[in-house]
Length: 370
Ligand SMILES: Cc1ncc(COP(=O)(O)O)c(C=O)c1O
Image (cartoon, rainbow, N blue to C red):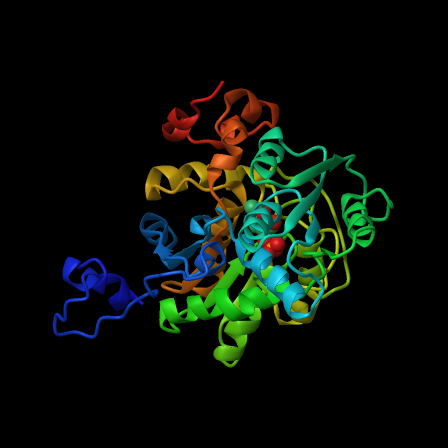
């Protein structure tokens, strides 16, 4: 991996000039004949240089925020639509319906436009107006509904399912339990990571919403490495999965809550279930560490990413410390901080969450919003 990274710091190597050493192309320069859908995935793998030094490890992060719809969820959105097409569940002009608080809806809305479908999104009405506006801008029909638990028939997922069954030529894509989501990561994220690291990877870690990213990437990396690559869940407070994995499937404790969005889970989804036994361990990351890492990634690495990405990076360092010096750990940068900037970089919001003091003095200058 290091040889690969060094080769690419050379401008000769970047131009593909033969400089007498084998030059590896980390990802194939893309021409997408199919437009937006063909541009999903194939994201750069970034070595987080300063953090790697601090952690005494190679911390590598997949720049999923550079997907064309701006998040890791573009991969799942594409695969669940392709799966519905292949299974004959939707025909041209049909309607895709999903319950989603954000990124999956954004990915679906883009792909629906590109493929000629209508897009209907149900989401809890606790979500920011910014997300609702963006989905509307992308042509989706948005239904913000009261935030109630999954066992309530008015939960946004059940409403999405009912909406789809009330229409002809319509599908509820069911991202949580539709395994086409996990398949996206078996077929794309996992193979990309393996190729980009040349197989020199000791562990993978990421947080879970649906569990598609963690489960699919874990499956591929375990299979290709004959079980050598380890996999760790990175969990925020308020999710049951940390207790579930660390107790060997006995406990489902849900204490605390988190400012992170899109992650944390109250159950083992159908996407996660096939891999839950293969996960080697879990780390739980408090919000104080995640928010500090949002600011550190900006200051030290020039990366403007959201809190789930920051949580993943903190987890990658903790996993590297478990594995020992110089280990190589890969994680995901799920989306940009742009979607959360009015919160994450606002003094009053940080104060309201008791998180201002988690930002070290030298990073306070980035709190530029009131
Ligand atoms: C910002 C963000 N990070 C991480 C995830 C988790 O991805 P997955 O659903 O594959 O577990 C999501 C899911 O929506 C997300 O929106």
